Length: 279
Image (tube, rainbow, N blue to C red):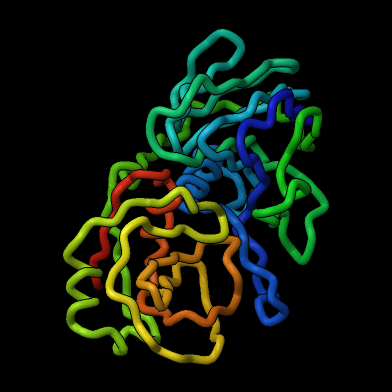
């Protein structure tokens, strides 16, 4: 078991997500940063869908109940095992009762902790991903325990360290959304010629950008959305749906982020800048 001594900020368990239920209004969920998630499991040679811990801005304090190998990817949060500082994107051995802490955020916004073999929980609807941005039940709390299998004999000598250059990127590659052609020239000029900052309204459900572009009077039926769908409100506010975003929406869907762009955006916090580039 992995025991949560301090939960940090919004610590959840995520695998690749919950597919096949969007027709019933169930979001995909899954890791906000699929690049960091994939690197964590890749470094440990786990199954690509193995569940990992995702934490935001403030890392948790956890105690290992069994020997295992683990790695940390994503945001740089100065991890420490007992009294020893660690680096991201390396495989380390944890002994029984070792304690992992994080001293503070240096770069990025979301970190990932993976153990060899992944974490094991019952899950629901084919996924272990925790969903519920506005609820307390979807995140871990002090003294919660997460099962994993002991792995005392694994040699990490053959693992390759992967790099995550997307933490430093700010350009979001996008394709045209279904209502893109409703935009006029002035809106397009504002959309692609300026930088936007992440507002305080950002979470696993959606990111809102601080700056606006000229608004619209488009009337449309509520239609399907996806993680990465960029919506434009009548007042010109830009909303980007994330992994826990709703499955339908009534605002024009003007752009769609690439998967890499979603990972880039997920590592941005309030005040960070981004811009759009059409592909």
